[in-house]
Length: 380
Image (cartoon, rainbow, N blue to C red; front, side):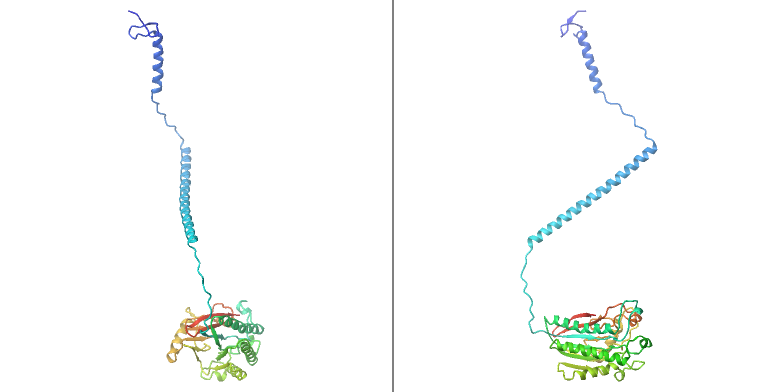
């Protein structure tokens, strides 16, 4: 075996031309390389007990649900942000486009004209109201005086306000009856604070004082249509053909007319029958007390019986507007108006199954060119 020299200078093997020392170094280097290049062996799965696995699954489901809620809130927040951005954009556009122009104040032309109609009915001044309606209303003679004075004062005030925009040279003061309760029912004999004769005198004085107040505080003409109610009768049952001959209110109206006979601004129109008619510009107004129309508390209210009755009445003589009292409930039916009452909610309203209504009367305006333009309650 011939010997050769290794690269390191030592004696080398013939096949490799390396010495023993260099062979060992190369062998160790190969081992290190093989250990790093070898792939990792698979790890055996860890076995988890079933109970713990259930707990883990539940926790995962809970986390998934919470994540779903969070994602939904996030999406909702994005929508809210978009909506707010859109609103801010609109606000910005409104601010940029804001411009004002001058509006000239309205001044009355001085050529327009209207007639104010004030309706008074169903005062029942001597009746006493209290416990029988559950405390919803209280009424006696002193309260009647206060409400009557308030009625005339408020009617004048409302008319004055309306006269700022239109000339109102005439007032129609419709006296539509039942200013007293009388003794037509046995309970009224027991409950009233005055007898019918004394009550009609009180009513007369209240109305005369109110008319004088209107005359003293304005220069308007006052036309007064008068109708007897069903409570002022001296008979047990209602009479229609001879109603005035048995009505204390008819006597009241005649006395009032005589009292103001020297006042040129006051005219009385005392009805001899169920209806009276007043032509106001282009509107024919039919006045009445209203007791000729029967209402039994039906679900349609007084609209159905009144519409049927008005249709029949207008076949005989046309009217554009019907005005009445009697039902103690203020109603605007378009082509008819029903007045409220000064007494307010009482046993009659309760027995008729009427809804509760505070004491009120009615005021409306008839314009010369436009017809009825204003309708308001006079709250008492």
